[in-house]
Length: 124
Image (cartoon, one colour):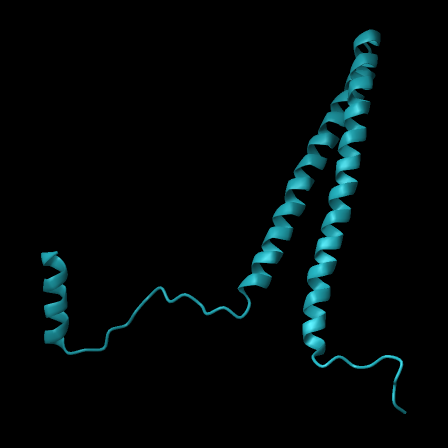
């Protein structure tokens, strides 16, 4: 039974790679928008809570204010973390298929040629 409604892709692996990158971008954008909304709403609530705590001079209100500040700091850190994760994913995707860098070279030669090379390096 052939499936004429859904033709097969010529290279399904290429489509999967694109889907992963697109999903990463979509998820990053959604997370970023959500965190921005939380931070904006929290900043407004922080201003109101600071006013309430200042007027009431109640320790519980200052404790709530302190917890709200900690929550906003945590949300800001999470915003930075998701950006770092997205960047590392993009770097991994970009580096796939590229040749690796060779950091150490091995010279196979005679003892005399090696001594000559060392002397030339020392003279420089």
